[in-house]
Image (cartoon, rainbow, N blue to C red; front, side, top):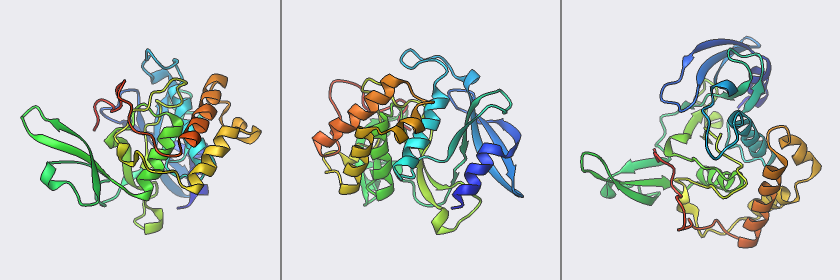
Length: 270
């Protein structure tokens, strides 16, 4: 993928607003950016369009979207689409994220009957629909989903729904090297208190690999370079909590199990 073009287009491309994206909880718009003779779709979330939440500070979700990309990039995880802050957009300052065009690959997270769970998936929970059908949510046990689950542990993601996991490309391309699996909608992240709610619990009790432990160590040390990367998006308390989470995960040595004393699945989960 042409990462430099994507970041340059997000940062300085000329924009055209195409309209709002339906069913989003906050003001969310689709923009087309023109840069260097090429076009790029992007998702714009203006700060003024954020609905107040009782447990997250006001006017902070766009900043958390950007911090999520920066942490993913700093650790070379590649799970969050390129995201920047811009001030010159239709409703003022907000996050601008490369739009992921879904591919035709099989979904990484699926909802099916128990007899139709894909062979390479692990079941997470069962549910009954309003019309009385019994279904099971399951997800693939792949390297790409593991990377998202690992990122969510660190970022303390409070809202990893199935629909927030997309396999596709940020460019109008079907080349294999441009296809990835991304976690989008990362606004509910980096809370100092434990908030992890996700449908990707299938990696629980899996030991961390050497490269994951190296990433955890980098975050736990929180050197000046990483602080500088995140400090204009997160508070000192959130940065300290991020480093403490990494240290706790190092001590635990594996992906933790879902706690039984709080809600661990986002609602709605899809």
